[in-house]
Length: 408
Image (cartoon, rainbow, N blue to C red; front, side, top):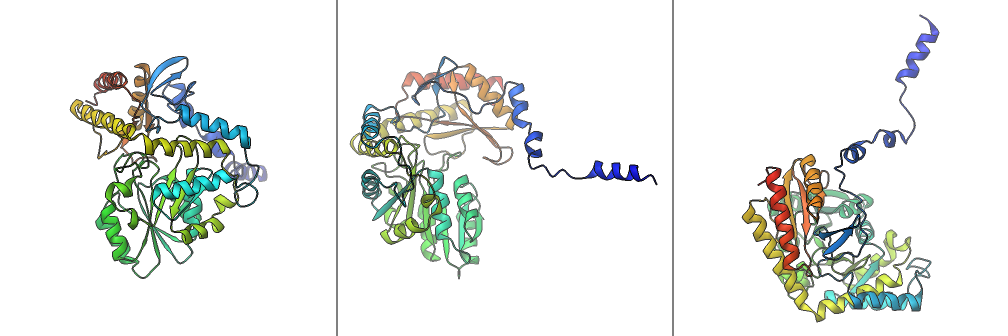
């Protein structure tokens, strides 16, 4: 046999060793762009208000997590400006070393009081909270138990830990008990979202607490979408159910109701002290900038002093839930200002988002793997600052587009 042919054949079947090959072959997003159906990275030219400017055109925003409408609040902006004047724009180091300012400590004390816990610890992003806390607490012989629909940051925090990860079916308490019973003799941490960010439903916290106590586990609640929204005074899912003393750790982010970027964990002082000295995402990350810290502090004051904002948020939420159901849209088990419109196929969700944009409505798309296969949805979320006129535009647009696509 010709040696040259053998060599050519071997070269033809040799596997590429270029790690970038996957990048060159990735064309899913490019196909959507070429068909005018790409709904991501849209460039907004204004503040996150009920109305935003997109490509020079005014649109009603129903894709923001600015639930209380505080990101453009004069008091929040003024607090950020004053912090920059005093401290500059950054801390040039980690909290662990030179990056702790007096306002960081003051915010931690304020958050602990607000969450009715002994202590709190702030991080530069909410994602980093879950990475740092879970990986610090869950060791190689431990079990971490999570809801299958938990946020990606929880899943990644579990992956960074040396523990064993076990999942239970979404909000299925019988399945949670099955897992707990199987690992009855192991040290266990349960981590759940308080409000699930795509579905808009609330964790069955009373049942989870009961099982936590029965099987001697510990419980952490990621309340990114619950704080400022749920509870008599806006303190989140645990307050909503009257279980603040039964949840060991409550995590929150600033990028929703608290009008900034960053996150925190709150709980018993000894637990927070431990996390403070072992959470790698805290120790090896730059400190939250002064403007962000001051913004959150101002937002907490507004939440406590202006309960009418939360009341208006729920008025808007209830109106939209009722309207979507009356029109015949599938909204799943939503119980919060996050209202999903379940579409089904990914392609139909992409098309619907573009059609809504043409009608002057900015809404988000969620497809696999963010949601289960065949459950693609348009994710809408509402603000206290939406007016009836804004909501009228949204309802009209959804009805028109829904009928055109045969969804209703």
